[in-house]
Each structure stands twice: as C-alpha cells, then as structure tokens.
Image 1: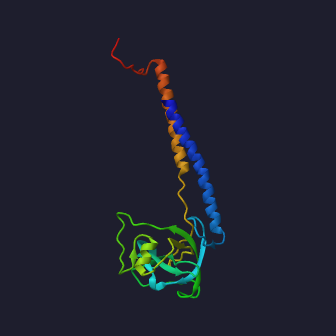
Image 2 (image 1 turned 180 degrees about the horizontal axis):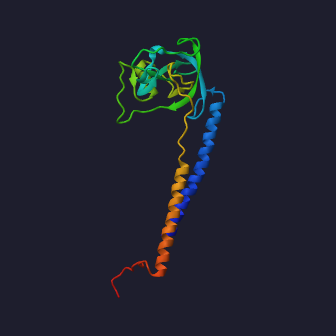
Image 3 (image 1 turned 45 degrees about the vertical axis):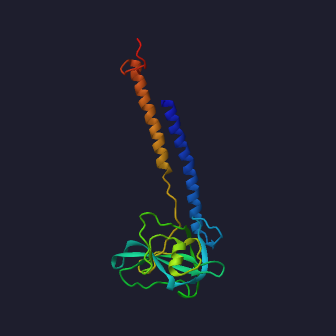
Amino acid sequence: MTAVMVAILLALGIWQVHRLAWKERLLAEIAAAERAPAIPLPPHPGPFVKVSVSGRFRPDLAVHFGDIVRDTMRGPAMGADLVVPLERADGPPVLVDRGWVPLSFQAPIAWPGPGPHGTVTVDGYVAAAQHPGLFTPRPEPRGRQVYALDPAMIGRMVGLREVAPFTLIALGTQRLSHYPVPADRLPRPPNHHLVYLTIWFTLAGALVVIFTVWARDLLRGEAPAPRRSGGGR
C-alpha cells in the first residue's frame, strides 16, 4: 500500500512539474504579446492576445457594469466599469469595457482620439461572454446597470439588434485623476503549480519516512505486527 501511494504522489508531483513548465511558457508568451503592438481583431480572438478595434463610440448607449469601491483623489468612492458599444464598419458593434468610473460624483470622461463621436482605435483584450448565475443581481434597465458582461443581454437592453459575442477590455495607463481607469495589463492565468508539486513531493517523502520508522520499530519488535483475519487458531 505504501509503494502504491508513494507512486501516485510522485506521479502527481511529476505532472505538476510539466504543468509548471507549460504555464511559465504561456506567461512568457502573454508578456511578449503585452510588449508587442496590438494586432487587428481576428475572427476568433483568444483571451491572452492584445488586439485593436476601430470604430465610433456610442456614449448614448453606455451601461455600467458591477459595483466596485476604489480610492480616488477625493477618497474611496463607489463606482462601476463603463461599457460603451463601438460601431464598426466591418462587423457588428463591439462592447468595450473602458474601465472604472466613480458614481458618487460627476467625473469628466476622457475619450480617445477626436472625441466620443469620432473614429477611434481601441487596444485591449477579449473577454468571453458572462452568463448571470443564480446569485447574480438582476440588471437594472432604467439605470443601465448590469452585473454580468453578457453582450446579448446588454445589446437587448440598449436596443442593438446585433453585437459581437464578446467584450473588449480596453488597455491603457491608470491615472486616478482621469476617468475611466482602464486595465493596465493583459490577464494572467494563476500559476500555483510550484506549490502543488511541493505538496505532492512532501507528502510522498513524509509517507516514506513514516513507513521507514514503522518498519524499523517492527523489526526491533517495538511495533505491533498486522493482525491476520480469521477466527481459527
């Protein structure tokens, strides 16, 4: 039993070693993509690629996503992400999450390029559609407040017949005196594989130590030998 359990633990540890190498390569690729210029939005974008989209913002159809407290120049403030449709010439509108804005006071919104109604190019990364869960608050159509980045639902709320099936998370420089406050880096998947492999190898080592101590005491006659089953003498 000890040999089987040690073999399983070592196999799990070795698997995590391979997973660690794979995750480090993925993180290196994400870092390289972050440093490189954005690529035009492909038909099927991945979640860890910096892309660019050109079009015209529709600030009249903007919605607020979530409710997050952040530090501002005036102290902590309740806010939400500003999500604005971007109309494109070569496809359906794309919902762009431009970043966090405070809701407790009127803050001037900065618009890239010539302004909210001119043609602009936005760099960012793609986030897959979120579907509301059992405990997700209901959207508030009157206040245009949503709690899940569900493009289809948001499109229906603001009266768009068709929208892209994903959201573009805008990238930019974070400055608390300017709003929105965009994301400043591509998303990274968690990398806990070093912890996992340490746990599996440590458990395997501990099991070997326990078995060694038990076997030594058994040979010395200090540990009880396993009992045989059966009632006969």
